[in-house]
Image (cartoon, one colour):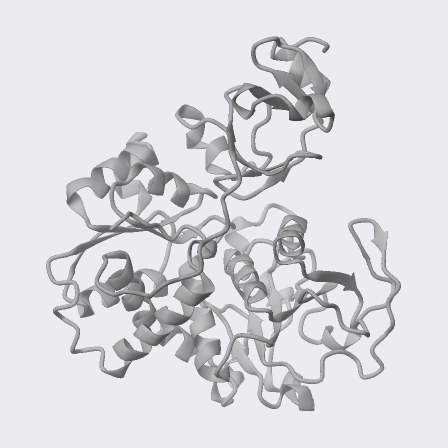
Length: 453
């Protein structure tokens, strides 16, 4: 079988996701009868960040499938503390040591690096604030079981939307299934612009930003963002909306927003990724049953990836709408299905052919990823070239293949002639990709030895 990796939720089609759920249901019917499914296979869990549920659910899943587990759970106890690169770790562990690698790492794009260098499949268990696709599958599986579908759901994503990789992966997946999303941030933790841009460009959604007082009780952040599928509603939720500098002529919904909420997905403050200037967790709001008295929340599933801090009251645990402990429990069967699939033990059936991948631009000169947390700007400086998908030709839009951050360079140099051209010009488009060097500024181009064209 051709090696496949799960680095991003985009690595699985919608059809494959739904097929995984069917297999997970079979595993969940009786967790104790599958000990021959992956007998003789070894799973390596490489966790360079703390984890309880994700690591233990993967290890439990593999043991229930009859396989073995080897684990490295403290970066300081691995050869990384001696300066070993992720690439070398991948070559060693993904050689004869294990048949499948599950990785968690603080650098955004780390899973992409390990997938490039390992001979065996790699599953991303969280890379910095980038993505967490297996948590997303667990979340989608929970919604699917609770609501009986994934299409046409109204989901509120609440809390730390800026640094939560779980939120980013979940939003991308829900958009693919045509859900409507309401982003309600904690103060200063708004959904990043690059996430909204990707939602808008890739899934053609409408993105409206403004004030909706009806959700202020959940999290009194500055901006609420509403994302709807391709065809916008006749009435929008917000007044005074502005996005990407374009004013939208919006009408206020006289009923105060969505009339039925299918799920509230709450996240904690990701304080381990915060810099200076953020308040203590105790200053943030706590969701209680009191917040859920309105009719629109009658059948709402309250979800959380856990661990919680102060954002969910313990009083809420007794509410039948609280699904977060069931959500955690379902992590075992869905990860059993993932392991079995990536080891070639189950078939997910035919899937729609993926869209063609954008061309890849690599160069040791010119622009680098603007994300300081990207692996290419950290240990990757030693052995990785800056690498981008060419998302759009004119005007040029490049997306880092590791962390997903995007850049729009303004100047293009010809590698052989060293001449410069406007990156959006007709002459630039005629230069073959392998001969291009993109720059963010004239000074950057001059410092690299390129002259006027």
